Image (cartoon, rainbow, N blue to C red; front, top):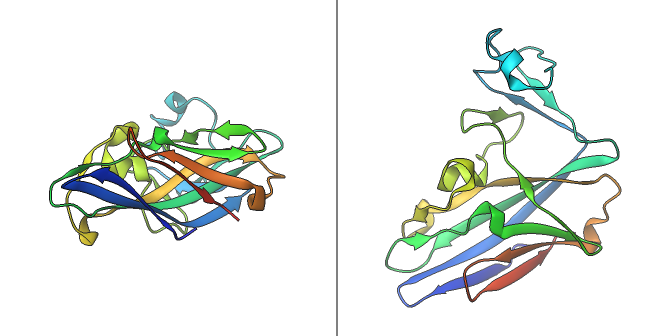
Amino acid sequence: MNQQAIFGKTDRTGTATVYKVNLVPDYSYSDPTFNSAHEQPQAGDALSTQNGFNTKKPAAGNAYLFVYIRVVDTGVKALLAPSPEQFVVNYDGNYYSYSSIVSSKVSLSNIRVPQYDYVIGPGGAAGFINPGDSNAADGYLIYEVPASIDLTRASLVAQLDSENRDAWALG
C-alpha cells in the first residue's frame, strides 16, 4: 500500500495509490430518500432505520472490505480516470468486484470521503479529472468478501489503462 502506480502517456499521465483498507462486518449509512415512509418500500429489502441510519449487512459468512484509493492527474491535460470496474480484489485466486452505494447523497457513518465512483461519475462511469493534486479523485470502493479473508494474501488489482496494470498488497 501507499505505492503509486503510474499510467497514461505523454501529456495525459496519472498516478493511482491505495492508501487504506478496512474490513467491517457491516456498515451504517444515511440516505435522505430511504428515510421517508414513501421511499422505503421501493428500496427492496426491508431496512432497519434507526435515528436516520440504516445498516447494510453482507451475506452469511461475508464481510465488507473498504479500499481507499486516490487518483491524481500528473499530466498537463485532463485525464480519463480509471473506472471502479477496473479495480478488483484478488484473494486465493477468486476475484471480487466492487459494490456501489445507492446514490451520491448517501453518507456512511465515520467515513469522510465519498465513494470513488461518485467522484468520477454516477454509478461508476469513468470521468475526467484535471491536472493537479487538488483535483484528485479520492474515495473508497466497497467489496463483499469472505469474513475469514487474510488481507496479507489479498491484493487490489487494477487495469489502469490499456497498457498499465498494477496491484497493491492489502495487508
